[in-house]
Length: 632
Figure 1: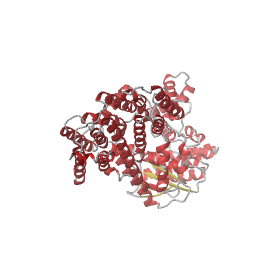
Figure 2: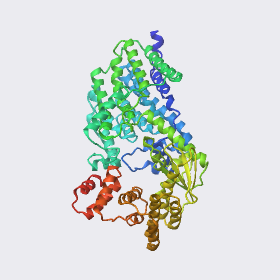
Figure 3: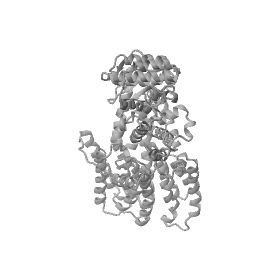
Figure 4: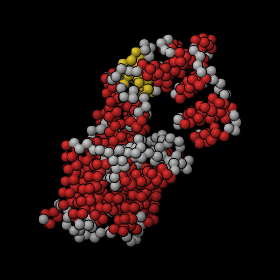
């Protein structure tokens, strides 16, 4: 058997079984659609492929995955998700191939295949394949491994170029820098090219840091997290908590166990995965005869990759995301591959089979916090987004070009429907029309070519509203009348903010005629705001005279509702003080509003009222502290 196997111990033969294992385990994720950030990148490329290569707002700059990767997908609509999954599966296969190649060069065939199986069997890897935006991590892994392989081959400058590509794919690729710089020392080469390594890798990294707008922002605030920000250091307790969870995720250990539905398909998939792993390891049982780098040096190499890659998300990312362990897993797989290559084959086969099985089980486990990003949350977000798309298409198979679509979204938590529709402009992808503009009702723009008003309910039903007639139709259950009225009120404020005060007053007056005294009073006061902003004091007084009286706390609550959803016309919003009978210089009212918005994490509103309170009560310590904390 020895000569027979020896002829087939090429790199493709060694890397093939781990790649097949990754493909089998990724199968449940290949049917997912787009969700979350996918739509942001798709709409950005739709708007301008060349401009998408430039710096973007926020803490990140990743032109390779966010522009180049999404460019061929932008015109395919929602159906392009299948191509994204195929591209991600290919990237995962290349990453496994490069890892196997590197481990094989350092420690031999068995170490290479074992390392490949450990990466392929990582519970969080299929999630990256099933999420189009997971290409950011996969590209960083591919280019980072390529940089390491080129560094081992002595091709210093090409290795630097690969590092730059990895950094331009995801910022956490900076974790490859220690290994690249210290490679000659780790490998025991003489002479060690430390000066050349510092010049090449330091130069590329410095250039990237100077180019990256997010690093400038983080450095300007001392890498401390702003309120509600995604990136930045919070405290050591959060860091320690996340670090423990990342270590468990690296070991494929579920945080909170939950029952697994062992369907025939799931059982067959697990059996296939285990057979692939055991079969691959069985064909390379023969002992290695080539020179090895040695466990101590492999351990140093592994630590130089894994420790920075674990530390960065634990320190600076304030939401647990299981896929962050895919990059440190490269270092861990190198070390464990070398270690398990030295033990009896039966022990290796048992360890790898157990790891693959544990990873398969942990993918279905629950998490202790509701906002953790895991494969389960990917599946839920994909299903919710598809339900919303079906709802829109059921009500409106097509939109006229340059339509303005105003959408109010019920709270959807981690499903992210509001961000998907507004930040991601998902309707442009749903309808393959980059001219569609999705806005919140209160932020409408004047003189649209065509305009539509919608509410997305908490059941993900899509409700189309005719604000002038007061009618609504739903893609699912009968729409709630109060929910429809609330969206119509907000739309009326948007009309007044864009100069259509007469139409706004008519809509609000119609609502007021059919409601209880409290709601009637609210609607008439909102209508009076538009007249006050236009200078029609007499008309506003008439409406306010018709408005039923409200207790002070209810009037303050009404004012807070207006301020929570500001329009683009500040002069209109400021009329809410008069309309609701609250002095803009009442320190007690300003303090209550400031504390309400501060506690609810409405940062701009909290700062606004804190500053107003400081004007009224100079030296107020509470408002000064809020301004100091939140204002940037």
